Image (cartoon, rainbow, N blue to C red; front, top):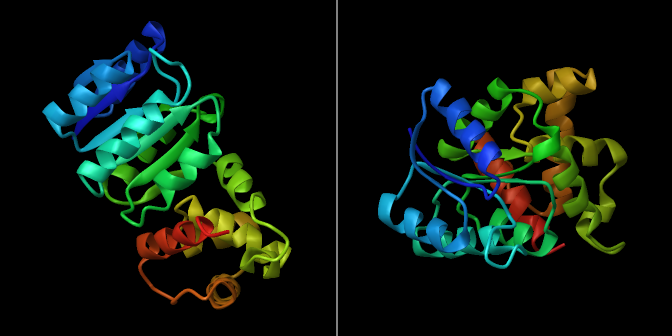
Length: 215
């Protein structure tokens, strides 16, 4: 699996490259700034890109903007954002374009290499890999009169776990509930959000994330 990596800190960039290579990935480019990222995405057309938000020369949201630009040129290009910050405006645009294959992880909350490699694979396969804090910020951005406000606290928990890409069984285990109880909560979430129920885990997560764009 071919990866383009964008991270301005030299030691972290090399460390991530070594970690991914040890898990069977091929690093086609490891770059340190926005223009190099743009060139690498165009030239290599990777299976997945791992991108920091703040890259030179602006050190603002250069990486995320270039990721969005690349997704417009190649819909569905798998992008995993790895950052110390949650940039809500551009994050919402990336996560809710309806094409899937996206993730957003916070650097200080990635606990081990296996977890990170699994997230990269999940995004490359068209799924999602979302840090709970990112999801919480996006959920809390909704106003009091949005459909999100109609969810019960338990339904919001289920929605957050769905958006992380977890299966029904994983959600049930996390919340200490039965599979049937989780299925009922998910049905209630989709009904309140006006979204069609689907047995396809990736499609349902994308539908929920797409809804968040309007919240």
